[in-house]
Length: 135
Image (cartoon, rainbow, N blue to C red):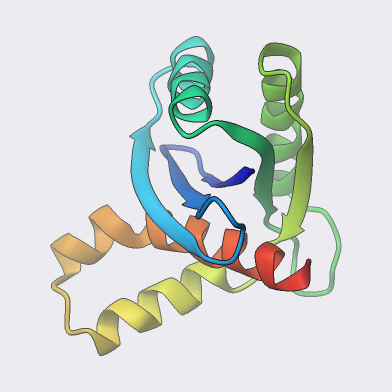
């Protein structure tokens, strides 16, 4: 049983996967978005490679808990995933995960260039770890 965590953005998709026992999340890659078809193909390959049985997608709610424009875009993309990848998708509140990821990288003294490359993958790891901790 492996769970895939994704942080869907306009330009990238951060990807993390759980260990086989479902205790810890590890960031594995950042997908550079090209088009929906390629994005789905990349996600399918990752799901097959890691034998994923569930996908957890970060939902970027507003601070007051409402669904905004970006959340709508993420929900639409998750519908496309459901149509193309036969796995259950769970939505996970991702408020402040990108902030936490950036803070962790600042504390690790990573350069701005390195932070930019890693932030989505680390945010996906935070999303997935939050979900794993809840179960």
